[in-house]
Image (cartoon, rainbow, N blue to C red):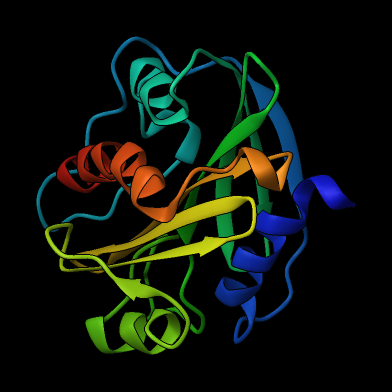
Length: 187
């Protein structure tokens, strides 16, 4: 389907070396006024991407109000999506699951900098000042930030339904970086 092509290409990078899993999907209202609090330092939280950000943060990343969130979990990811009210773009927050995961590791955790760099450095551009390592990737109608903070890895992406509507990579990075910074600070 053309609509999801750009994010599918990005997600393919994430799942290239991962095993196949089932897919779940559900729609949920936006998270409460404040995002879920992080686990205590050194502890791994049970992460729900839909609850990791506030509605205001989602709206800022989309540069307009957002609709309800929807959960989409699949091979190597737990993710949440929000459509813009105008219907021309959507935002994706993915918790990247490393496989094989170390024993007793919760989804999103267990990454090392070496493994993270191995996955993202071949096709994405390094991005300074975000987490322990970060990369950005601009594809036709989408822009994605991949972030490693401690052993947690996640990505945020803005996908435009029409490639021509997508701004330049630096504009996408500047709108997604505050959201990624907030998530990294909380978890």
